[in-house]
Image 1 (cartoon, rainbow, N blue to C red):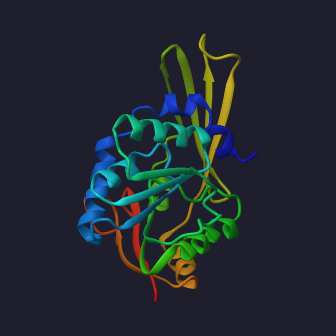
Image 2 (cartoon, one colour):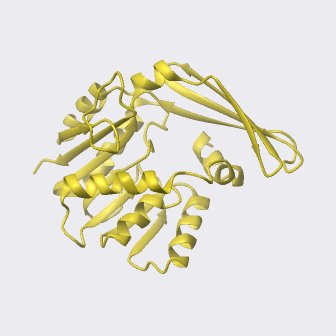
Length: 247
């Protein structure tokens, strides 16, 4: 079992990240809506949608949204959340992003560093092949990834805290061009000590440019944050690539 299959389906994952910033998600969607000018009703795929915070925001703006994620727990949460909000024009499916859906979209969004989870460069780049099959000619492909250079220079080696009687200890380190995050849980609310590992490949902007170009994606702009500032490898928090599939 891959690390993300075990960790993302754990109830401890949802508890640790329960306070993910909804305003931050809204800022990103506002930026994309402004710079892309997608027509109302456009079909958008949220690739690696997690619990649906971006997909739901997109649906509320009038787009036809499909969200896919490998985590059954995340998809269940997304469905429940959108149902409680009375949102009907949205669909969530449990699916591996490497396996394309048998339909096409006007835009595919891969947001909040839901990329680089696979062990080999070939597998990670293979996601672009999947996206290419699902995009209409001229369709938009957005990748929102961390700035690998900034991660290397500002990594926080240790962090700890607690919530609801559960103590967590986080260790971060870089090895073989991957950033690791080891999370250990303990306390009265945890049966035995539990340990999970997140692992994400560190890719620079040049890697994306090369691999996306091989698959006929043309990068139109690269932003460095959710405010729309240009990417600067020394200071930017994000690497936000806006591209389109060449006709």
